[in-house]
Length: 391
Ligand SMILES: NC(=O)c1ccc[n+]([C@@H]2O[C@H](COP(=O)([O-])OP(=O)(O)OC[C@H]3O[C@@H](n4cnc5c(N)ncnc54)[C@H](O)[C@@H]3O)[C@@H](O)[C@H]2O)c1
Image 1: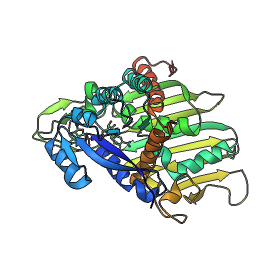
Image 2 (image 1 turned 90 degrees about the horizontal axis):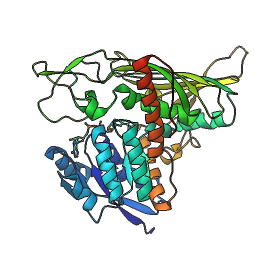
Image 3 (image 1 turned 120 degrees about the horizontal axis):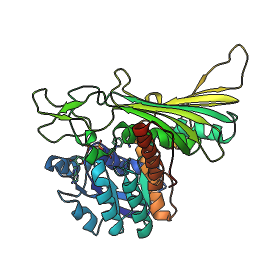
Image 4 (image 1 turned 180 degrees about the vertical axis):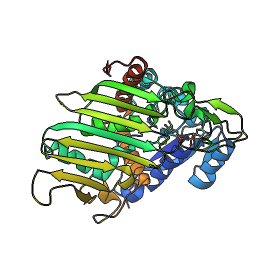
């Protein structure tokens, strides 16, 4: 029998992502049976008692608390997941770093690039490993795309189209939660969805160096919920209304750097009617093209070369050899899902902690995305091109 080093997990915030992180830790041993470590769920904190109870009763934490300090002060906690709303990222991450606890934090990792930079500095000063929730990178088909691009199969990359269209805010009765408040979320769909697209484009092509952008708020007021919410909740038309303070839609034209001549178009909407969680990236090169969508996350559409009667895109199903696919399914074409992406993230996080070698994406990648978002916000305000600041 393998003896595994026990890693005590503390969770701060038991909302949608907190539950997903917890399931990822619990399922890690099935995907990575050779792991020399075994996470166990020690203590979870949430501001809402019902969520604390859920953590203990359903997720399997040994204990729960209403005070996140109890998580960081617990001697049995070795690592922490921070799944709080954006306005609490900085406080919780800095406290975790001060307590010497490595942390896996959700994107966008603060309300703005200044907070993200503070989080990066705190982790660096404390010498703790981090992970950030840029989960779409881990899709096996995305990893296949990366391999094809790195091998030069598409030739020189000329242009990129990233589109993240969701309907989670399309209902005007969608509750006025922290997501719509500038002092709690920071930007709207730019930080929430487009940060994922920026990270994907950066991961697959090159860093974005210059941006011109526009933003729009479509639903300008929403009902304020009269009780606690999880994820994207709705409220009643009888509830009092509050004004939405950040953007529902954003679009930007970009230039890539690091020697790439590629240009790109990225857009995101949280109020699209039709697309549900339609997150896609299309990459065009001089010798071929490919496209991937989260809605069909196990498929990669690829076209290599020109000419011939059958010229066009071929749909290639994810298979063993593509990223971490074989951890979950033995044969080509068997679907993996969102939970599996988080298992890979948990594995990379804990491997970084144990090995001392930081695996990307870390909070540094969150900062790279936040700086692009910041340049986009500046451009949306003055209509000019903006250079992305260096991380
Ligand atoms: N990686 C992804 O694909 C992805 C998807 C969704 C959300 N997110 C990110 O995850 C984070 C959380 O989003 P969510 O959808 O899980 O939100 P959520 O609203 O479902 O959960 C937030 C939780 O934080 C709790 N909370 C509030 N104040 C707290 C406090 N002081 N102490 C402890 N807990 C507190 C709330 O009670 C709630 O349970 C956000 O930063 C969001 O951008 C990432």
